[in-house]
View 1 (spheres, rainbow, N blue to C red):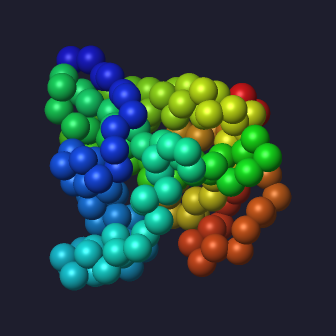
View 2 (cartoon, rainbow, N blue to C red):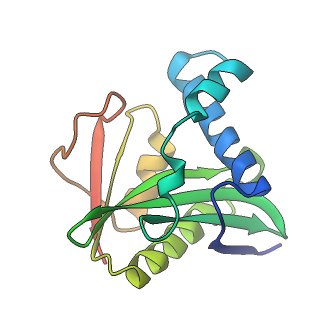
Length: 158
C-alpha cells in the first residue's frame, strides 16, 4: 500500500470525516475521556476551517491505498508565514510514513502560495506530533501566540 496526498476542499466528505476524527482525538486526549458527539460538533462549529482554502490557506488529504487516512491544514498568516494545523493520521495508518508525507505535501502547497516559513503550536501531551515535527526539520521557537492549548511552538524555513 502506498500513500498519496493532495489538496482537497476542507468540507469534502472525506476531509470532513478526517477533521471530525482529528477533533475527537485531540479533545478526548485533552479531557482524558471520550469526547461526546455533541462536544465534537460544538468544537467543529465555526472552527475556522473555512480559511483552509485558497487564497487564505490549503487543506491536504492523505490516502493510504486509496483510503482517506490523514489530513493537514495550512493557514496563511501574513508576510510569507503560514501556520500548520490539523495534522492527523488515523490510528490504523500510523507508523506507515503518512505523517511525513502530509508535512511534505503541505510544505509543497506552502511554497506554491509564496510561503517561506511555516510555524505551529501544539500541546505538551501530543508527544507523537512533536516528534514528527522535529524529525522533519521543525525547531522549537519562542511562543508566538497565547492560545489556550499552545504549550510548544515550532517553525521551519522553507
